[in-house]
Image (tube, rainbow, N blue to C red; front, side, top):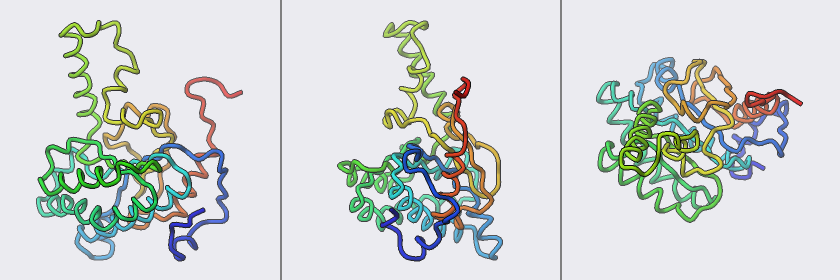
Length: 258
């Protein structure tokens, strides 16, 4: 296990958190928080934190794939992030271009497929092309899905889904009484993930304990693990620790434990 990691990253793994290989969460979602604060603590520009955060994405993708996780969803850019300073937004829009240019060959080598959800049609043309090329280049990979939430916001996603369903009702394709939980799930951006569309566990870095408009429908029964380190300091060992904590939770889904 962890054959994809270099020696330094393998050494980071924590012997105190031995995982049950039969209870690895199928879908792990991460709110990658703290890039800017990581940089500011080092008296660096915020974009330095985003650059370091990109390197962390590569390391955690490798660790998640080696663990046998089926879907790794990363909250990369929200619909609210456009409010940030223009220079920072412009830099964030360039990151996918650099990321996919350098990392897609490794993803293909290790059978990882790229998926991107969000309002990608609103992204700059070069960013859209980088996303489309990564999806196309990895389409035949059938291992872990690396799922980026890019220009994504859950309230906007749900609003779009409701509009689509309302249109179907208006045109007589379905009756209001036929709208179910499953109907709504099928109209959300995670629908293509099939049985893995709802995260088993959501991890948030940097010590903040809020959801920030992320997968509000899908996380109804997810476990949450909030961790203090900023995203650039997140390691395979910390991922292992978060999954260890998940494995020691009792998931009842509204019922009772047996």
